[in-house]
Image (cartoon, rainbow, N blue to C red; front, top):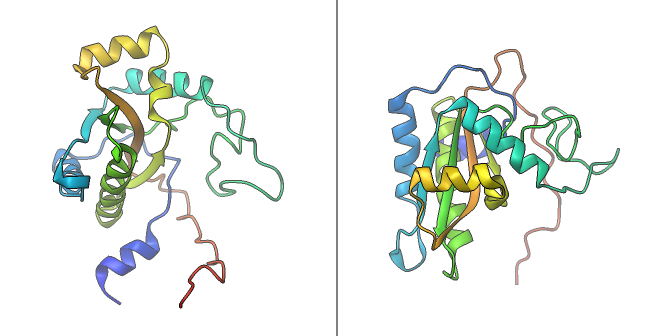
Length: 195
């Protein structure tokens, strides 16, 4: 099986990270994958805001958690048993799971394919991250992290154009050494239809 397919089959959402920051050359490769992602009309409208500031990431992650109302997991309906999400465990107070690097993907507010452009960029980045031994986790509804005065202050500090909004965050960091890699769920039957 080719290396790319192996990466696709191996990659999983990681929600527990080592404190160590990822190296700059590794980060640059991951970002390059995002910059070369397809974009509607070739517009390249996605802006990647990288924060490796632990206190900023923790505060924005707590704001996001406070502004998120996920449908809480049940015994039979959950996100992950191995690495619980904020929907699985109400005791998790940081929606960024203490990841050392948080990349917020911003896109134009009134562009029809803003979300799709961010999603394909994130997928490219997650695959390259996995190849490089870096864990990642896609976090949707990015704007909720900025839904208070501190968040608005950060947007100004980062110089984010008011015509852009935070679509999502991509968490990056080395997976906890003592954690097993999450086990893939069996693929559901009947999802491929041929006519």
